[in-house]
Length: 302
Image (tube, rainbow, N blue to C red; front, top):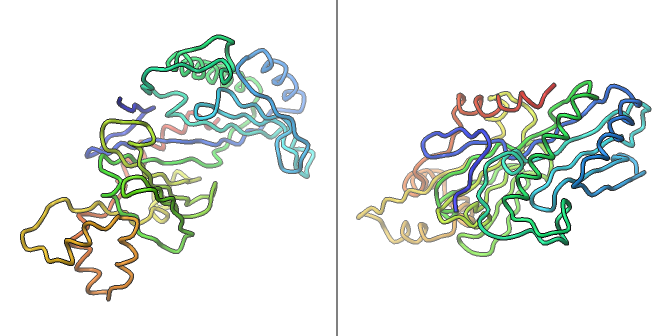
């Protein structure tokens, strides 16, 4: 299997994409909202939720099914009368618009919002893509503006998860650990700017090649603002040196999720020395690469 992407940028073996987008929508008027909802009802493939809770969306549509879907909220239950023309669109362009190979298999009728019959994964993904484009086209008729609320900038590194080292900083840190190769690390809070996630993309997507995903949630297209929020990430040095001492050999066997703990126990000179031996280089996002990737977001901002 091979994972494909939507409008990727390649640089030194790494793949950079936009992995998630959340747009804030502003409709032309309450009348436009009603017309939009009438026309939207003719598009099949969604689950509908209605809510009167404060600071939620009156109308919420989820197209597709879990793991391969996009969400549309219309009519914000806010404190202002103008909130009724607000909405949101949440989608992953890699999954919805990208070319992804899912292998064999079928979506059973129980989980298939498009048909009572079984549908192949390939057909299902093509249908979700088609519906998304129909919804986006319909939105253009009734929207005044769209605003970029936040997005996930993703970098895929063709290395084992155990060879990608995230160093903690002042942000909240958490991890889910199963093994040396199957663990996920987080910095920051969920759905907030500066949130970082590092995980084993090979395992998640069932790939036959090593791949580690680094994601950071942003709300700006400015490179300097991204660089301030991007964490310290190092790639382990895979070269075995004949002069390695026992301590270096032991540290190299330490899972990267634990390595930061030992670094913090060392003096500054020792830490600098062992980082130089154990870590080959710090990951940095080139400015031209970042700007090429985020330029793909302009099509969604109207």
